[in-house]
Amino acid sequence: MGVDLDRLSFSIDGTRILRGVSASLPTGTVTGLLGPNGAGKSTLLRLVAGIDKADAGTVSLDGVSVGSLSRREAARRIALLEQNAAPSVELTVLEVALLGRIPHRTKLMGSFSGDEDRAVARDALEAVGALSLADRLWHTLSGGQQQRVQIARAMAQQPSLLLLDEPTNHLDVSAQLSLLGQVRELGVSAIMALHDLNLAAAYCDHILLLDGGLLVASGTPAEVLTPEIIGAVYGVDCFILEHPRGGHPVIVYSAAVSA
Amino acid sequence: MTRGRYLGWLVAASAALVLVCGVAVTIGPAAVSLGQVAGSIGAHLGLLGEPVPVLVDSIVWQLRLPRVLTAALVGAGLALSGAVMQSVTRNPLADPYLLGLSSGASVGAVCVVILGIGFALPAAAFLGALLALMATLSIAKVGGTITPVRAVLAGLAIAQLAGALTSFIIFWAAKGDSYREILNWLLGSVAGATWESVAIAATAVFVVGTGILLSATRLDAFAFGDTSAASLGINVNRTRWALLGSVALLTGAMVAVSGSIGFIGLILPHLVRGVSGPGHRRLLPLVAICGGLFLVIADTLARTVFDPRELPVGIITAFIGVPVFILLIKRRKSHLWA
Image (cartoon, rainbow over all chains, first blue to last red; front, side, top):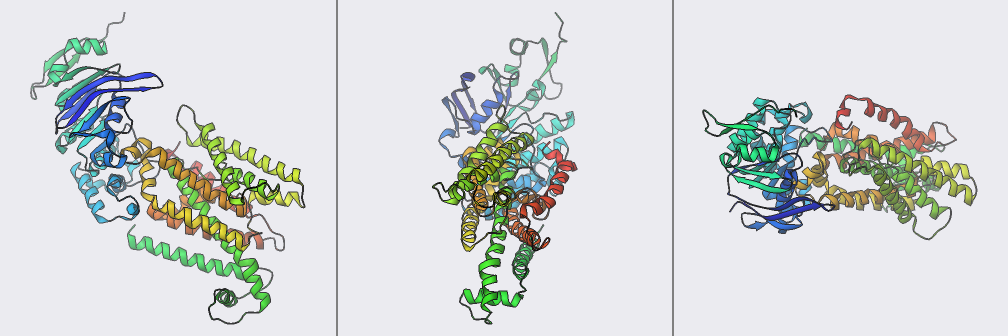
């Protein structure tokens, strides 16, 4: 059970974005999706969410093929946070969290639903420590607060799988650490695309490393984040240390030597 | 805002609409009292009431009431259209007039009215609006995205072209008073409204409006963009085109009875959002009622300010709408779309 990717391939206008990606991720684990820019991380997340359809291969969640679900059914099981999203109108924090209830409303009369939604949205805000912000306007929040509220919106969907596309982008160090700590505490299966290898090493149970649309490594942070693999994929020299407290790998880069 | 306060606004706006419609019918060259208006309407609906002189009755029932009701319905339809367009395109400047739909619908309508080509009037206006919408969006689309500013520029081009086409067709056909005819289509007017106009506008507002109201939740889902809407379970492309198609239909019907009246669809949603908040189940009903209220007042001004001459009502809506448009461009909240 959990998430199973079976030989996923996807192309846009004849360009192969993903080629035969297979992986198996157990329920309740946090998976880091790594790879250089253009490796196919965002595309893979969209396929897993069922927003784009794979050319070949399948995604299944707890044994159910995501491709066979309607958009609404998929949205009740999988929530996706895209990069740098901002609303086109002024919304309060509570209104943003309430958006997460949309897939749970009945189709026709869904426009007229009630107080249970409000309670779920408040619980979701509380879970990410943002309940005190409920009445603030979204655009007055800091970047870290906005991401927390986005996660609350996703949790209000009550998903069994949470997908995050570079959730730590533009956040300062303390906001990065507390956000990823938050994701772990939610206890829901999560896959997140990350750029920072050290954050991935510290907060993920499992790493998928993509390069040019191919899955080049999969395993625990210690198995994947080795000088050889990082050198081959990113073209940088590095040393791996052991974190004095957590025991997870710490990547220390050597300064690039100009040719 | 609490549910109670919102309902208070809704009831107050509805009551104001009924009252303003009633008062608007009393205003004009021949003096009519509110009691006579009620009496005439009561008599036609088969209710008991004070008998009303035949002359007064025909002024109320044949001339002024259809015009006032048409104005109320057209205002409601245009305000709804603007609200839906702003949400679905995530563009605070979206409006059937600015993006060229109204002008496109005018071309379709003029083809039927002036040239007498086939089609029913609302169907032709709908086709014109739909073509203009597709043209605007495809011109504005560069590299898969449409920015608000590009959409407005593309709409400007389409509106100019459609305006020129409308004028050209009217001149070419050259029946009667071409200039007056052109002004009425390009600037909009409900001066010629009949009960048939009321029927066309009412059918469109109530049928299409109901469909739009039932899509309120889906409209909310677009707040953070397409990917976010999709991840909330919305079938993005199907929903967007269904809603934009509904807007074209609604705008087409409005233009068929009144020409292209500007700025209602642009400014009303912004003003009403300040009261109702951005959620569509509250925004849509209130914006429709306030749109109706706005256009009834504007039309009453249009026919009384220079009495006995009449202005096309679009001049009044532009005088009010353009300053608001400028405020929207200048204000600090432009972080939402710049």
